[in-house]
Image 1 (cartoon, helix red, strand yellow):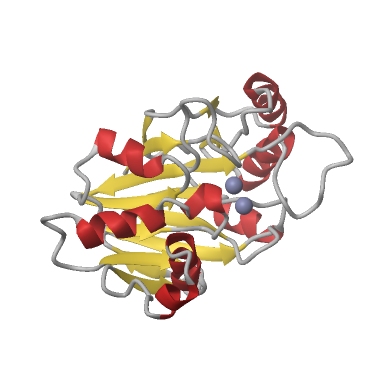
Image 2: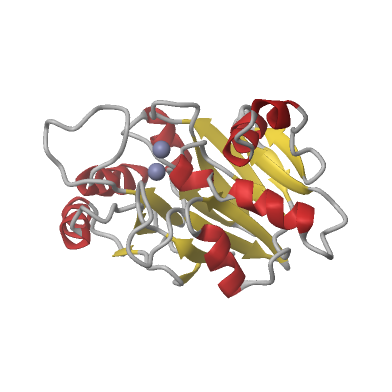
Length: 256
Ligand SMILES: [Zn+2]
Ligand SMILES: [Zn+2]
């Protein structure tokens, strides 16, 4: 399983940096994970426009999905559009959310559900997406939001999405080879609960879950990446790094 980072800027796109977007690839199948601000542009720098096989979204905040409305335009109006709808695995409100992001006029919205371009699959039970087994779990965030455990060929990756510390994250991450964890701020007691992880909390999650390798993502432009990494390293003594846009990370059996 190969992880490619299209964007990793937390909460908003940064200067020259896209918000959340990743590719997971195995057996010739390309699963796009998250599609936030700037990710459609970055995707086209990495791959042909219509080369993704499915799209998986953790939740419907703009930094994780807003470019789906533009992907609709591409798939609808390109002179040689794809023949099949793109499978989109997302929270149940995804169609109305994306239609609202696309159409400013209520009359136009009433005639659209994007089903001509996308086939929507609400998240809930574990699901096979191409060669991947994807296990979603509700996490601690102010909207319907999921973390995922994604397995293929005997290796596994857990992704937190956006979440404060919670039992669901511990369960998803338990024993995985790679934990791709958000860390949106440094650790101080005043932080709003059930919203995000600090660098320290990401490290503590990795340590509790016994993961093989910790990859930190979703650091906003106003937060020190170095401070977040130091916190994570102080709580987790395994391999730990900040992901970078364009970075490629082979998910292999990391645990000894
Ligand atoms: Zn976010
Ligand atoms: Zn969010």
